Image 1: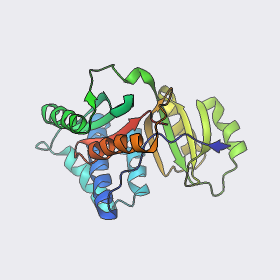
Image 2: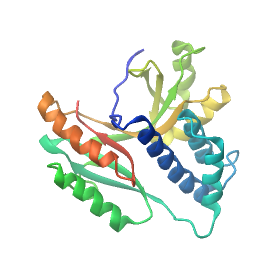
Image 3: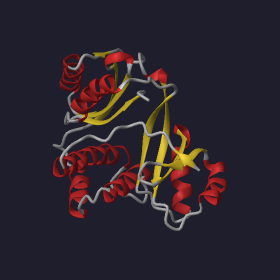
Image 4: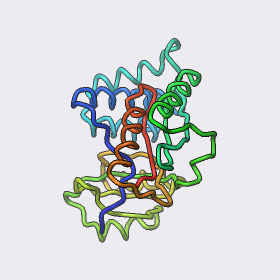
Length: 236
């Protein structure tokens, strides 16, 4: 088992700012999940997965329950997931996953972030072909034998198994196998720290430190936008 390629840079927020951003992001994901599949996590795998992620970032139980109740209200915002594509400086491809109730506002803000940091927002399809969408499950290594786990998960769509920089086990599968992998882990009694879809670059762009810092400046600015859920890039 080797070190797995990490595609998303953590935002450099202060602790409480970062926590507030995570809670806001998960709240929007709960809104989308409840409206798609209902408020019962037992019959809504998408909601069940997001609730696991919420626990992984120590989101209070009452806040999770409040987000579910708010999603059922008639007067609450209807969020939709929208993917924006563009280029950072030095030809680095960037994908921006948003959850928004106002696409006019969101696209204007995202375009402004790109323009102010020397990048450019592209049209749909201009960047996504440089990435592969997949499922990613982060597991705590305690009590798990990675060799056995790899063999057991192959039939459920496992494509890659490795560890991240913090020593967590990362299980990746094809996007279409996400549900199969989630079910397989549940049946084995394994509760992921987090489970998400990621965009993995097919090839990476190598930059020197000064160039990389220019790209990080754009990524950090975009990540701090309230409508932005995740940012992916192909910088090596």
